[in-house]
Length: 267
Image 1 (cartoon, one colour):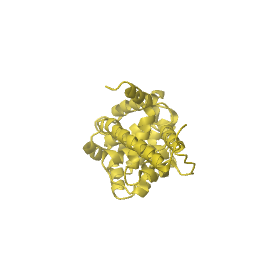
Image 2 (tube, one colour; image 1 turned 120 degrees about the vertical axis):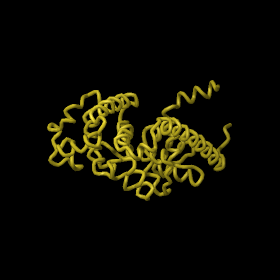
Image 3 (tube, helix red, strand yellow; image 1 turned 90 degrees about the vertical axis):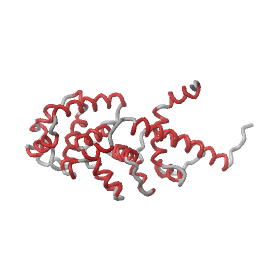
Image 4 (tube, one colour; image 1 turned 30 degrees about the vertical axis):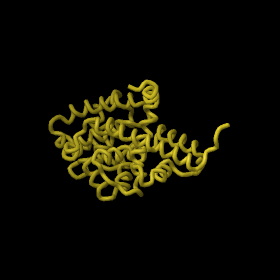
């Protein structure tokens, strides 16, 4: 007969699960944040490099990772040629010639009259991807030194991460998941400290995270209406970083088959 779980057993099981997610979260940082090879110093001083870093996040939405990567890579190759060796001068020319929108509503902007838009093609993504690129350029033009990463880091360190998340969502096709995804990894990459009350700003909830949280809550019989972020934050308490748990939940979901094989055939 199966032994009935008591509260202590349940709590121990959750803490063990959270400990595993924390370890996987650090694997995520090593592989997907540090492992991508982006230079912190260059990200803060080179606006065009920072712009491409931003694209490497905003392109990953609503489709397979491999297709997103193909679209993003094609766009970045094209942009490297288009902006050439004087990206700031090209950006200024785009602005002055109305080649990119001047406001979030695209008032008085016509894509058909933009030479940049005319050079985009389907290998770089769907229509919404291409519109997003134009709108990110609109967004960065008005930032100090046009640098989106430097601006995000400054906002995070000044305690305005929620404002920055909401501001990023003014960019076409950038919703709550993508803005949180980008900001979470900026926090990781630059080792920023944020207030526990702001954790939802760096807590993207996709299919993998949602499924992992659902299984954990089922295991302990939790039927509350708490959001995934609130539940993780409550369980993490002072012991774990909820942002790292979030990354670990994604890593577990995305790599579950590989992790299972590793457990069967450890090296």
